[in-house]
Amino acid sequence: MADFQEFYPLRRHNTFGFDVRARLAVHVRSEQDLVEALDDPRARDLPVVVLGGGSNVVLSGDLDALVLLMEIPGYRVDATGADVHVTAGAGENWHGLVCRTIDDGLPGLENLALIPGTVGAAPIQNIGAYGVELCERFASVRAYDRQTRAFVELDAAQCAFGYRDSVFKHAGRDRYIITAVTLRLPRPWQPALGYAELARELEGVASPEAGRIRDAVVAIRSRKLPDPAVIGNAGSFFKNPIVEAAQRDALAAGHPTLVSYRQPDGRYKLAAGWLIDQCGFKGVNDGPVGVYGKQALVLVHHGGGSARDLLALAGRIADTVEERFGVRIEAEPVIV
Ligand SMILES: Cc1cc2nc3c(=O)[nH]c(=O)nc-3n(C[C@H](O)[C@H](O)[C@H](O)COP(=O)(O)OP(=O)(O)OC[C@H]3O[C@@H](n4cnc5c(N)ncnc54)[C@H](O)[C@@H]3O)c2cc1C
Image (tube, rainbow, N blue to C red; front, side, top):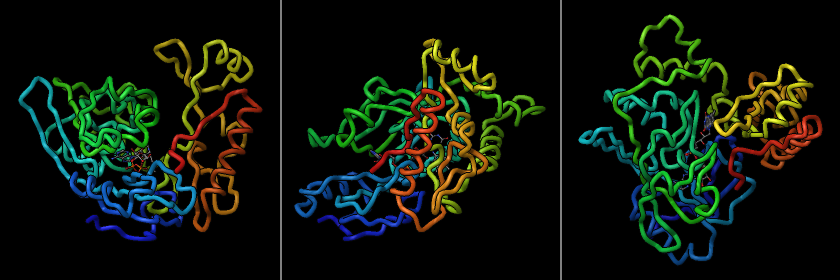
């Protein structure tokens, strides 16, 4: 029998710090815990919500659901092939994994340092930062398929990774529960220093090692982003919109400081933070929620508010950006 807890408080399980409860919650520390919880007759009629660190969700109210708190541990290295493969349990802390691999002399994840949350959630939105995306270091996931009630292995093609996107946000949503992730760390290691801000931070450092790059990423992130332990947030609240070249050119003609990045397919990614900043939202507070003063892309919760307050502000921002620039920006976190 699963060790369910009723009306379980989730405030410490979402980095916005919204004070909501789960009808049933269970700490999942093994694959057996997972199957037992899903098979338990007490949970049979409830929808299932999977939570890692809660750093990319907006919990919109009390959840009449079974909440699986993913805490499966594990760390295994296979260095027998050309590349190194590292398998980690879904419940491992992502930044902890980055540091552990570096300490073990296995570079490759350093650009993704200090991203909050768990290993199991990393493939869901194909986490990315400072010029590297998870899919570039990815081999496979092990997941429980709720449709076939069996464990499966999914490779990169099956995960259909895109910009902050994967199959787990579409056809695989509510179907797969990830229990472990295997990363492929290519050999020989090449540092990824193409991101201008990172290159600036490392100016004067000849041939930086992975640990030095990790420290630089941590330093930049600590300056720019609010610590969820201090102020509720989920990192970037909006995805950078991708537009056709013609639309970007028309916008750039009217707004010479427009920040945009050419994509391999010829389209352009616009900096959502710039769009929001231009609309005057940076640092604006609206009761218990607001826009972070140092980074317009980050929405914050000062306490005592709810997802309703946050989503109202997010909607107002998206509407204003659309009216002014003709571009719709979309939320990055999963609204539960
Ligand atoms: C300060 C801050 C900075 C951030 N910076 C970045 C950044 O630079 N780049 C970036 O990409 N993201 C960033 N994020 C977002 C977030 O950290 C990542 O998306 C992270 O991977 C979420 O992990 P989590 O364990 O907290 O997931 P959760 O928020 O718990 O869950 C996110 C989604 O994944 C699902 N999920 C979680 N675990 C599993 C599982 N085992 N199996 C199936 N589904 C699962 C959940 O149901 C939910 O839909 C940032 C967040 C914060 C607060």
